[in-house]
Length: 94
Image (cartoon, rainbow, N blue to C red; front, side, top):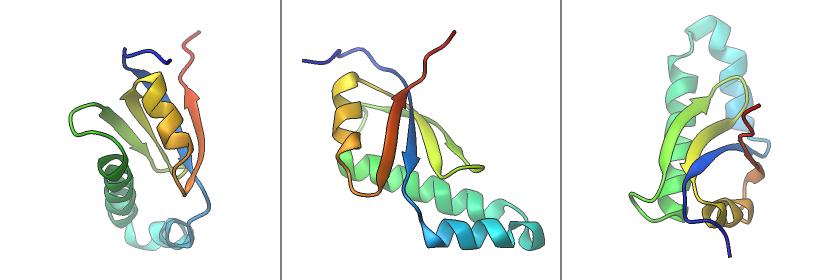
């Protein structure tokens, strides 16, 4: 059984054509639309997968379709099985 202590993880998503489109448009329109899209997408994934209040999203990563979140090892395993999630990796601080 995994740890119940929250640690920082990076979650990277599978290919998303809307992300690619917004990223290409970013130079023309600015970053706001892409930022809002990713933040909402990541928030919805977490809200639909994990118990409210059991995680803390640290940030959405605009340069890649991913986000940093403080979760337990068990929650990381749950996220690994969610459709659309490519990789869940623990943030190993050197």
